[in-house]
Length: 236
Image (cartoon, rainbow, N blue to C red; front, top):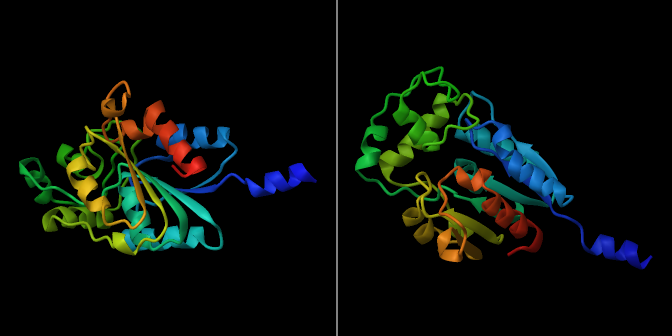
C-alpha cells in the first residue's frame, strides 16, 4: 500500500517532443532513448512537408490536448511550441530560437529565393537556405514546406521572432550553446529574460563541460542530452 502510494506520488513526466520541420525523427533518438531509459513516456510531434506555421502550431495544440505534458523541443521546434499556446506543465528547450541578431552573414539568407519542392536531405538546394533553416548541420534532414521556410525568412527580414514570452506562465528551462550558429547566445539570453519563470544553463566549458556546443550538438552530444533529461525529471 505504501509503495503504491509512493509510485503514485512520483510519476515520471509525460514528454511531448516537438521536432523541427525539416529534421527527421531519427535525429532525436539520443533524447528519446535517454528519456525512455528513465521510463519517461515520449510522444513526438512530427510535421509534414506541406502546410505552414499556423498548421504546425495547431498540430502541437491538438496533439497535446487533454494531457499534462512537459514540452521538450530544440531550435525552431521550440519556437513553434512557444508560439502555439500549448498548455504545458513545463518547457525544456535546447537552443530555442527566441530572437535573431542580424549581421553580414544573414544578408544572403534574407534575399534567398524560396521555391516549391525544397528538400533538406539532398544538396540540390542552396547552402544558404540550409543555413537559414538548420545551421551547418549535415545530419538527418528531410523535406520542408516552402510556406514555413518563408515564414522563418520573414523573421530574419524583420529582425524579430514573433513570441509572447512574458505570457508563458509555465517554468521554462533553457540549455544554450556558446557556438550555436542558429540560436545564438547573443539573441537567446536577453530575450529569455522575458520568461516569468526561467532557468538558463550555459552548456559548455564555462561549466566545466569538455567543449562548447553548436546548434545540433545540443541534440546529439551526451552532455546536453543528459542535462535535458535532468531538467525533465527534476525540474532543474
